[in-house]
Each structure stands twice: as C-alpha cells, then as structure tokens.
Length: 189
Image 1 (tube, rainbow, N blue to C red):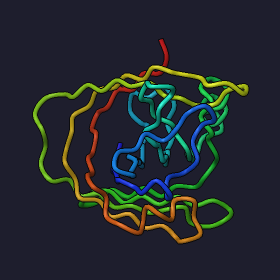
Image 2 (cartoon, rainbow, N blue to C red):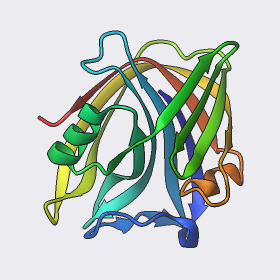
Image 3 (tube, one colour):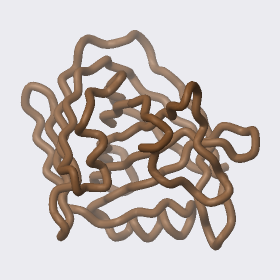
C-alpha cells in the first residue's frame, strides 16, 4: 500500500456517507489516498486506488471511503455487497523501478498518477485499527478494520487532471506519505 495524507479545507472535502459528517479541526479535514497492490498471499490479486476521509458518526470517529477503483469485478461486487464500499472499475499501470509509479484510467480519462520513493524504514510492524462507515441498503454500515505492516516513510508525487474526481490531490504536496510493506488487512468480525 502506498498512502498519502492531506489536510484539506472544509469546502474542498468530498461528499461522505449520509448520516456521517466531516471531522474537521480549524476548518480542515484529513483526506487519505492510496494505491494498493494486492498480491502474494492475498485472497484476490488486483490493484486499487482509493480516497478516504475522516468522519464522525455521531461523536465517534470513522473513516469513509468516498472514491475507489479496482481492476477486479470480484472485488467490486464483494466490496459493494458486503461493506457498502462504492467500488468502480479502472485500468491500472504499476511499474516498480527505483520506487513505484502508478496510474489509473477509466473510459472517462485519467483518474490520477502517483510516484513513491521510499526514504528508509521504521523498525517492527505497526498495528492500526479503525471503523469504516459506509452506506449499505440506505443505512450506515460500520465495519471493523484491522491491519499491520512494516512502515517506510516515502516521498510521493501525485498528479490528477483538474476534471478528475481526484483533481484536488494534484494541487498540493501531501502532508505525509508512507509505504506499507507486507501489510495484513482484515475486514469485519
């Protein structure tokens, strides 16, 4: 996983699941975007590009995936049916040489492109747990997410056409970027 985070003004935050609200501090919200390459021991092998926002479900902090594309029909169907994740299909290019470069396109054109260059590594494996809030069958569906990974700070460059739903990501450098190596990810339960 290749993850970047931005602090974004409230007026530029993407729409979130009905029943949730953007979690903001001093008029800014936290937006994350990631390229994910599921391979090796993954149940499915596919690529993914997503954007997510930190939200509130009542007083509880949650994460809401606002935009997501995959190159797997099976992943698309499962994500929508099980968790209310609004997956769409895209075509991906992933190149690994002196870092990683990713690009995603749909019939409507380029969504975004990104390049990550790792800058060292942090010792050990890092756990992360949170709850996802999506809309499923007209109601908020909350799903527990647990993960762990080896973390590597990275330098990231994102570009996106102005007419892409991800156009705002290319306007400024990310606040922070990391590579999550050998990550494990579990939904539900």
